Image 1: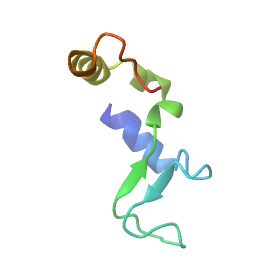
Image 2: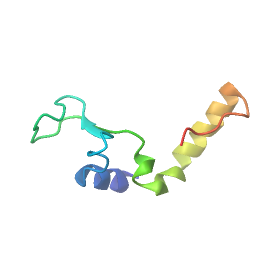
Image 3: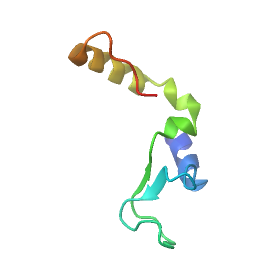
Length: 73
């Protein structure tokens, strides 16, 4: 998972759509990133949909919200 996320950050996946940005510096010509965020990285790396993390999160959500709980994406 780390390699996939590193690749997304390095290739600036989602930057043009506003899905990747630097929380500390913004997008105003920053040359050094400080705190990057990618909104819904599964849109740029579909393999992230099938991880143990997502399976566990869904199981917890169903315990809290009921069996009708479904993943956002």
